[in-house]
Amino acid sequence: MLLVRIMEETGEKHEDLVCQSCGMPMEQEGDFGTNADGSPNKEFCIHCYQNGVFTEPDISMREMIEKVMGFMVNEGMPREEAEKEARETIPHLNRWRKFGTEYL
Image (cartoon, rainbow, N blue to C red; front, top):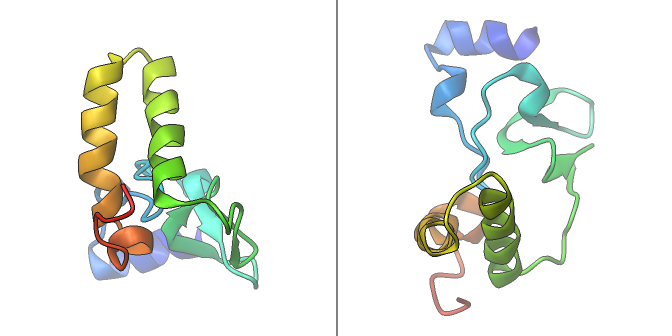
């Protein structure tokens, strides 16, 4: 509830937030990762960030793109569309932005 209160005070909405590692929309409190102190982390989702650390600290940008593509295909998105969306989105997220596109 702390995160909801902070978001209300700042005017942020859950639907505006996406994980800055995998691009997952974070729409409800349970979607957010957690900081080392257990508080919600607004930047990363529960799948990517728990207890203040990345769940897959050694995953490469290319591997994350493949992982996200697989998830989108499993959700019914055509593979070509999933690949295009993942390749256009992931490199621009905060976790990957510093690498540019040379790692694709």
